[in-house]
Length: 466
Ligand code: BES
Ligand code: ZN
Image 1: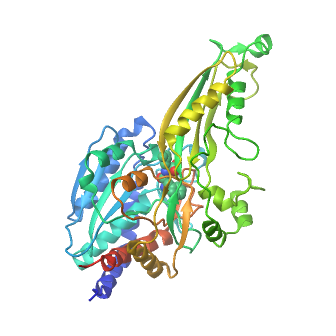
Image 2: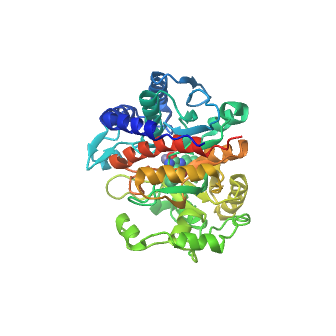
Image 3: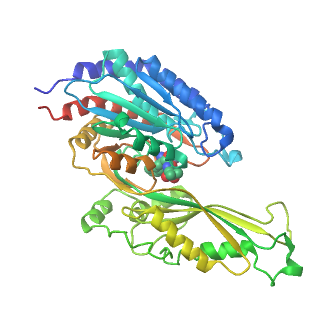
């Protein structure tokens, strides 16, 4: 007979209600720590953010440890095994993106502020707030009920925003630590306001830095312009040569491994309640762009793209300066779709950039990080369990979506264990992730906690009993 958890669920829900303010307050404490993984100067903050989390796990009586890596530490915690019930592994990250441009924040990025029904801070949603929903649901079960319906493992890292290389290494070296029946990740978004979603696909990424050197010193552009290649001009031409006006990426072999979208999936994506006009209006733009022949959602989730993230060269100060700069550089990436291999993309890119590189320019291409795309199977009793948990917490069933972002460890989990990965994001697309004024709405935070409370019970009920 299936167990009935209704009395326990009521007790856990009452605990959450009584502790809502305390949950927000501890979340804000964590957000004060500027755990920016991209900047080595913040290494001590990564350590502090990991320590804070470790204390929370220990305070709940979980077995927890901080695992050093060659980069930022991992935090691992587990609850006791539960006979006849599955083990779920919660993954998340305590590192955050740089907060620049700081002056564009309405309240300082590391001084969490509650306003308009949301918590504003760097990491509010990506991923401290979303990750904490699973910790607070665990706390509610343990404190109000005394036990969890499933075994939980938490594997939390501090380098997601820079490619997760040390966690990948850890999974290769010590996969037994992560053995589980399913993985749960909240590091994405709902489909829209009040429209929760389960995500079954993420794009991959291949990220690069290109550095160009021209003459050995800056030159007067009047005296020297027209004689030697200007690295800034070269950079503009080379980057423009990577994509054509139809949005097709111009790298040899780039599309070789891209599989066409099935008619059935295109239909399913087209049936999602998506308002393109509103999407563009919210972003303050007058028109869309992208690869010809695909809808906006297809281009956003299921087609590869090229984007420049940073450009530097020449004079950036006030007024005009007529200089022919000696150097130029850019950071850029390609979002990848299933079956594209970041290493193959690098080979093609190198070849293409060499073709595009004009005389008198020395180029250096650095590979920053790369991760393949993933497609997660949706036919699983655990996915059905997540559907029921979300339905109960949000009052409506989730839709199935893909997302355009990347979570490097998902592919590594899929390689290590053939198990379902549940991507259940609680945020919204307008939460300003990676941008100024990042936030998570308090309703989404609290509904996330509720859904997570239900999820542990639903996963227990979904476990095949022998
Ligand atoms: N939370 C995002 C991933 C994400 C973004 C999922 C949008 C769903 C929708 C994650 O923290 C992230 O930003 N990942 C990086 C990974 C990269 C640096 C390897 C990304 O996608 O840029
Ligand atoms: Zn992120």
